[in-house]
Picture (cartoon, rainbow, N blue to C red):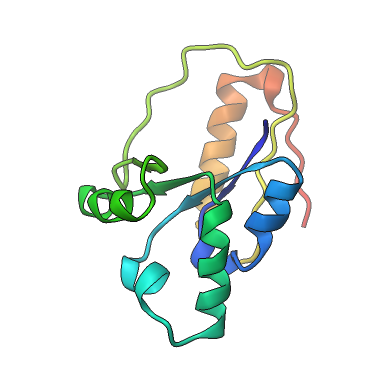
Length: 136
């Protein structure tokens, strides 16, 4: 089953998790903001729409132990913590011969220089799997 990773759901996720799940995709959120935004505030129609979509999210990635403790209580067994700024060593396995895509939607809060470094590192380490193209 394919997965869609939504790095900034605060900016983009209104009804997409429902549609993506209907299309057979897993949906993963990276949560940056606290529970006041995701589950406590009740002052915005947009927040209510986003909150309604949380039931369709397969898993959540958080960036700190504190977030993990809080969100694990709210979304049991769907939370994984990856320390913010963690370094991941080069991969030691071969990728299957299937296409890989990175899609960046929108232009707010995007570190395009860092994204270019990730793509170039992937190209250097796995040239056989890096049919890179740029669309804008």
